[in-house]
Image (tube, one colour):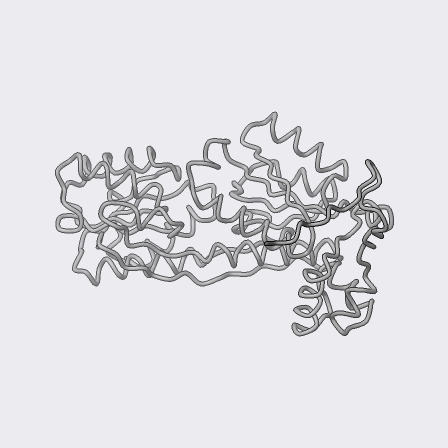
Length: 352
């Protein structure tokens, strides 16, 4: 027979009798566990500058094992910073849920900041009123910097943030502001050239394209890559313009088929638009890839689920978000803005 367990004596409101409250771990505790100085721990907590990879890993492991948490309020009083960052999507709210690329970037940025003990605030500014409210809010000191996603040429949002003195890093080159704002981009031009080359290697001779919006860096550079790869074979009648939505891709594909029913390949500047293009091709009786080969751009998870599975150019979204966070925190710490271009990769599936 098992012995009856002896219940603990508890005084209501005081906790277990004779049990000492657990002391909150300090930077000193983290330093002791990691085998580094308190100064090294402090540098890790403030962005990791001038810390070796081994020391950084040791401190991060020690933070997890000790359960150390920063006192954000106390640090804010000392540094004058909020110790938080905004993720600002400059598109209508529905695209946050419709386009999977934004969710991937959001998750990866949140993870990168979480490793530094910093929260990420999601903000969407697709209208004039939203832009004004958000600019006023972040300009009041509620965040240390802003990650701007899907910037458009001529949009007032980035200049407004800069006037407020806020550090900004953009996803994609901020057209017209490249000399003032740091950014991280995929190789849109090179990726577009590689996709067109792939379609031509598959024997396609009348390759069309559905562009993204031409006031975005991806829209412009992917169209430029398409034109460069075709060279003298470029034909303006094979170009239709889209808006990075499924409906926009479907409408653009119908337009192309009406103008050029003889096309045998199409490079679509986003996977979401490619989903619409595939629907339009199916409705017209075209078989993919037998009659028309289709290539996309992104590989955000949607491409593999389409029918047929979509050949596309993979953007390194996790790496893009991580580098955006790193560059932004460097600007917050006083560094000059920097720019990074990351390579894309051809992923061949059944649509070509």
